[in-house]
Image (cartoon, rainbow, N blue to C red; front, side, top):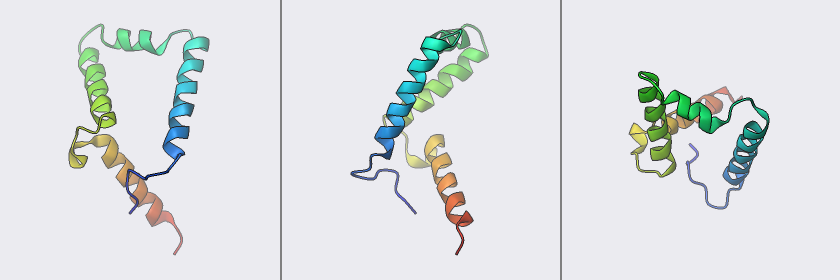
Length: 90
């Protein structure tokens, strides 16, 4: 099984650059910025709890403060890696 942290890998850097470009393009071209959508999501219950909960989980994941077993994004990555491995012809 592949590890989540691979020294020397540039795939993550390319992914962050693509994500930054997509956010910038969206904020320049879309009728609503992502910041405005986040603010709208926090404007009323229960959307506030869902939006802030998702933001907290994402932030905790990015700062690597959640144990892997409690990190839903890491668990999704592991499940995807297992599915890709199982789908490979042997």
